Length: 207
Image 1 (cartoon, helix red, strand yellow):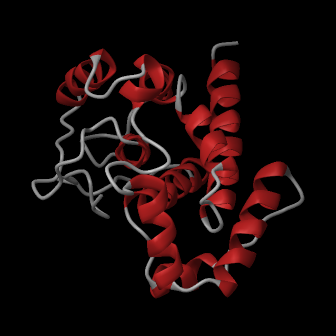
Image 2 (cartoon, helix red, strand yellow):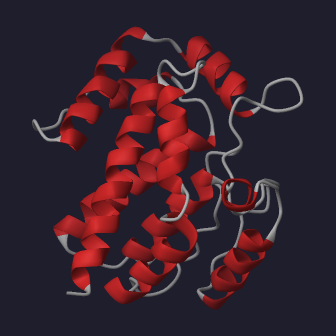
């Protein structure tokens, strides 16, 4: 996977602080899941801290692991989880989680909605667009306005409920529990809790 999986043709517009923080976390997860972190990213990760809530606790755990792990170890772990000999321990694709097979209807539906929103896969990326890193980048891009104006909350909710919510939480739970996960176990915890918060936030937005 590449660290830049989506084209970013537009400069982000000004958005609310809460939305910027949401987009930051989507972007952070996207980068961590697109490729093994280098030392610079590990150095950034180890400075993170959180409150005593579930998300803050997960971020704190990730920070602690980042202080003691080296890039060579994260690369080995990333390869075991996502690449492997033939395939990795996990297959981080919506089609696989929703149908049991790769390149199925969820990917076709995602491509249609990407086209409608002006989203384009980066030229140097050959991963199917329904991989978890791309989906995290897409959500961040919609919030920030990378593909045009910042998406309305209703549009974010529609995209999340169709392309992210039905499977991403399950993926992050599997990542948290994977036998090859050390650094990526708390990444899975952060993602799992964040997906729960986003789903609840979108649910409450309709009330």
